[in-house]
Image 1 (cartoon, rainbow, N blue to C red):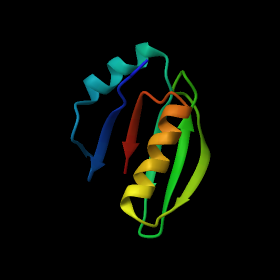
Image 2: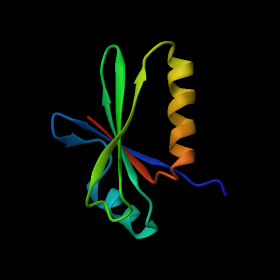
Image 3: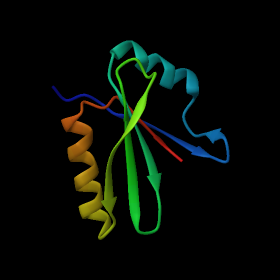
Image 4: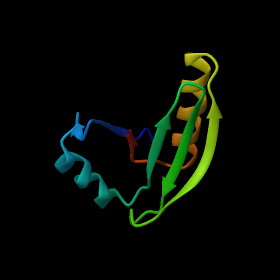
Length: 87
């Protein structure tokens, strides 16, 4: 199945995607992933399917954008992630 993964980017508390759209994703019963993007690493956390608890998942050491994106997409697919919060 080719499922979409929505991304909400929090920029100074102003979401680029409506939070109402993101809340609709909760009915899909899929986890969300939090991304803490730094200069050298990307920290990842994964929620449970109820979005009540998130636990650290992995830290990606940044190299080239294409490799970093490939690694991230693989994890999104592996964990059937329904959306991401970047901030």
